[in-house]
Image (tube, rainbow, N blue to C red; front, side, top):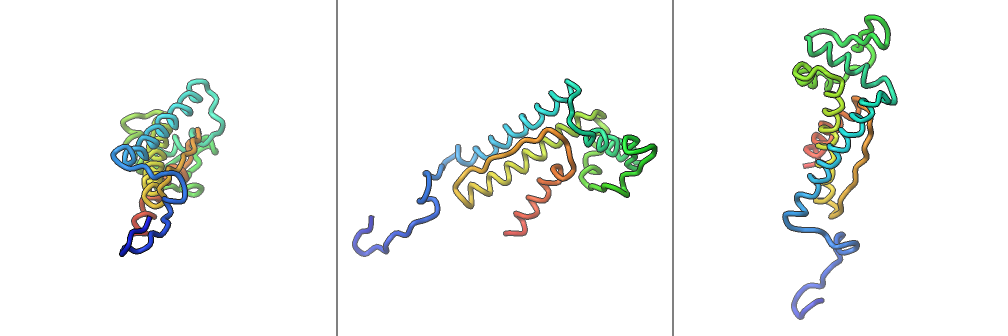
Amino acid sequence: MTTLGSPPRTAEPSDAGAPTPSGPAARLLPWAVAILTGVLGAAVPLARYRRWSTPSWDNAIFEQAVQGYSRLGAPISDIKGPGYNLLGDHFSPILVTLAPFYRVFPDPRTLMVAQAVLVAIAVGVVARAGAAHLGAWPGAAIRSEEHTSELQSPMYLVCRLLLEK
């Protein structure tokens, strides 16, 4: 409603749809979604691992690569072939950064949990940016198999957001 002497009010993007949440709950909701994504994102592959029903070889291949890096060696995957060096096939810097964690927790489940944590961080960043720019809460997808393209998502998203500023 316009009063005398005040400029007419223009519609803003948040006026077009549902009311925009505000307050502490609105600031925490993206991170709550991220935590939920991380918990579910770890629970699904861990349950599959426990039942021996992992749907592909990726986790085993990359687990061998991280194991090589954790020993300060080459990323050799005997699954791809005896002595097969992954540097000529599928180099991913994120695997090198996971090596210290694997050194402390030398188990294939380490990569599953690491992926869940990194994807959850990405979901939190995207949800927070979406809430700030759109006034809406973006959703998240959960995948149950480790792959390096998903492990790199948080780094890419943070870099992308920094470039926009």
